[in-house]
Length: 253
Image (cartoon, rainbow, N blue to C red; front, side, top):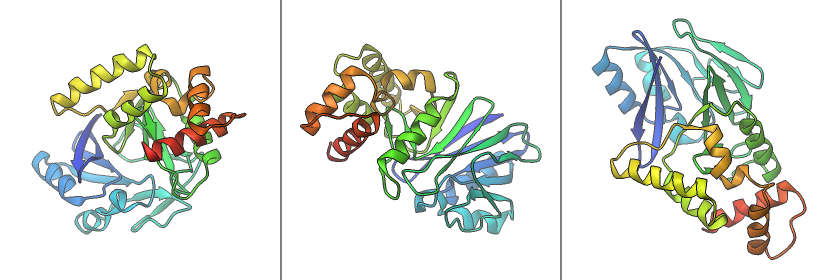
């Protein structure tokens, strides 16, 4: 199975999974790049996977369904236009013609009902986890988003993470402010700067590398705690408090 990034808007990625002549798309906020690729490659759309309800993730669904009335899988606790199957934690999706089965994970925080799809070492996590960062908290709580990130971080280290925005360089700049002496972070920044200089995506990325350089996955590390406390101006007694302080700082960064 091939996985193709389809750039959309300013910094979105719509992920297209192709196997043989079939394709599955994840979070099609814009129908145009999907339609164009399907036509150019002579592919048939088999299904749509949706992680959450924000317009830049669902905006193209209606147009795609007008072309191909395919199944639309989306979070049970959110309003997803055209959804044919509501999914939640523990559900397993098997799309005919696509070998990979995807297990659904509930990952609330960015939105109240956000889900992710995990299977065969692949993770499609929408706006919950980004390269060196995480989503803003719009509908959930810091405790929810922290728990969701911990759930994702517990997946195997070789998991390839497909998030839906090219935020990596700005996230790495914030991560360097949190941990200026993190060598893994410095090396990752150099690699990602080289990729972007060639206009290549920094996504996907491995979960193992993410654990070494994403401050939101490192809230129990002493340097991260110390820097978050300095920014917050008070002691932070739990990982959730550290996470909340980092997220608030990132909002202002």
